[in-house]
Amino acid sequence: MKEIFKYIVISILAIGVLIGASYAFGWVGVHQNKTITKAKRNAEREVFEETNSFTKGKRQEIIKYYKEWKETETIEEKKAIETIVSMSLADFDEDRFISDAKLLSWIKSIKY
Image (cartoon, rainbow, N blue to C red; front, top):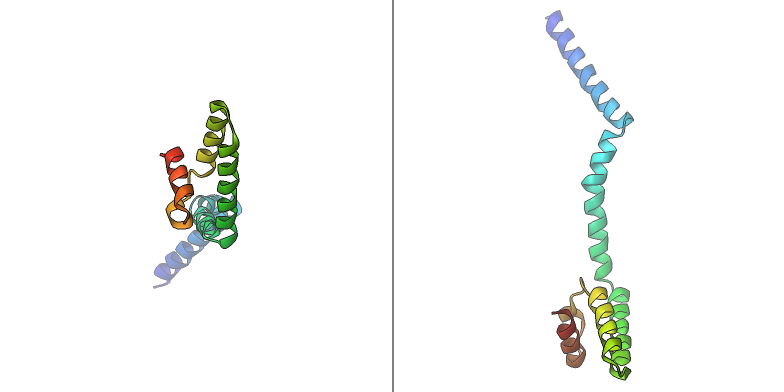
């Protein structure tokens, strides 16, 4: 009975030492940064992209570029603005947040 108890205590201590060493050497922290922290940051980013300030800012940006695009006269300038808009709105869901049909069709013609 004493032998079994001795092995159980040694096993628990060994597991404790391994867990302590993993925290001491940062192995757990690295794993957390790869998984938990990464998922948390992605979730925070998704929430931010749903905020009113983000979507209003994107709408204002689109309107500004559309006005600039309409006022330019050369094809090179139009292409430059189109490139900026397509990169800026690459991950933006225009169908959900843009209600103006003219702007929406302009964005889709540039992005797709």
